[in-house]
Length: 317
Image 1 (tube, rainbow, N blue to C red):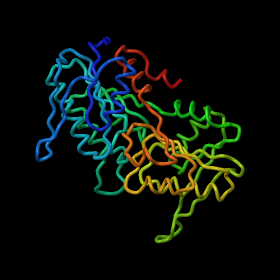
Image 2 (image 1 turned 90 degrees about the vertical axis):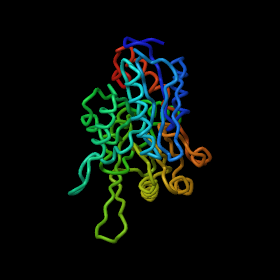
Image 3 (image 1 turned 45 degrees about the vertical axis):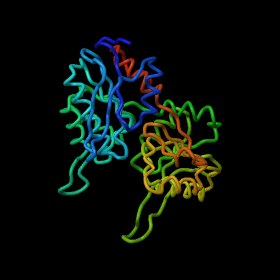
């Protein structure tokens, strides 16, 4: 398969091989043969086992758990490709780890998202492709072209297929996610509500205030990341207390650390829908109320358009 910048080739690290294979299948190509393994002391070794000279390379690697290992794999693969004379290297990062550290929350703290952006650039990436960044301004941390893809059109399609949208209300689980929730609500012509969390005094439990009329509606919570699951579970309880008939959640990145899966399966949440930007664990695959949507087609189409110098933003018009 050829683009305008040489033959299109995909190479994957160990973070999400199932997604990489699905993307390659969509593009009707094979993954480039490569070895990404550990020495006895867990030092990472990479060997590209095909000729990639003059190729348009796409490195598919989420920087998910274990975050630092997968980040180092991405950097070392990129360096290996640069030293193998690849014409162009695009880091395809479905889930961008460290994205939540996009600002200084207090004195003497790092902006780790900027540091990671610098590392990826210095390793030799010519451009970056990612999905639903936690904060849009992270695109500005890179001094190379950066495409931030959106899962919302795919989620909108799924919602329309499964729900009567006239009885839905879209809900942001916190004030910071209002813009994201509003965008999806506009696409399906549904009203918007917000769950406002606040702790009145130190040491007291958080109070969930629901802004908007949810009584008698099915609610869909929208967010970019679910980690421990506490916010979503508590938001679902607050919505049901205000008269919501049932609560669903559509969230792009299922980090689901610690006891999150147990928390979700034991909650009042009717269903949690996540994407495969992070490879699902056995616990996620076996959960009664967690469903996974694949982003392989979306990322594959974006890779194809990038390789042929076509518009990527028109995917979301």
